[in-house]
Length: 243
Ligand code: SF4
Ligand code: FES
Image (cartoon, rainbow, N blue to C red; front, side):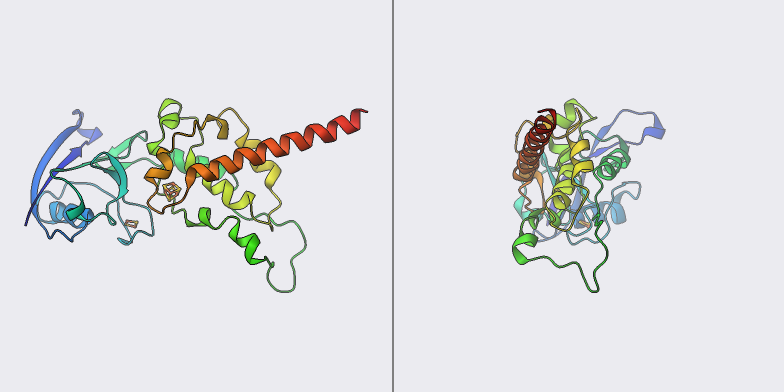
């Protein structure tokens, strides 16, 4: 079957403005968009640049805008899309080439929220135990694959690139609600900055964009609540001290 694609092309080194390339490839309706991109690269135009690794929705490297929505090219079936299938890089990150965006800034923000467990109590003989209920508290946000689809779908991020963005907040959530962690205060200090969680305007684009089905907006709301609770507790304690 003929599949019509319309792909955004851009090579900064060629000093030409971005342009659209129309290509028709042979593919099955049950093939994925990633298969169609492979068909372009392997049979029509080897200069097309895009990222992919696992091809099974695990690594997060092939997030791109497909028919106006951020998706993983390896998870979307051709039969579920109208044609021509319009494929663009995610919005809001600098384009390196064609569908590849520069994610350096994205990962710098990820690192700012201390995205790992900080346990300050002495190591136990075996593992650090946690009840099923304690584990359940942050189960949803453990599913993040750092694809960037949420952050690049967020109008608050488009308006201000200093904003940490939904993905970094999801990562913070994963550890803030972990009963074994002791770095809550340092994470909340970052999230409370002007570039932090208060820039979220609850637009829900992030939840809509997430290919892992994470309720991103809910997680951000829980982080806001935690910050408010933390602030109230701190002012209560300093009031007690002043008395
Ligand atoms: S929360 Fe979802 S959309 Fe955002 S980076 Fe993680 S997996 Fe991707
Ligand atoms: S290639 Fe790994 S998620 Fe699509």
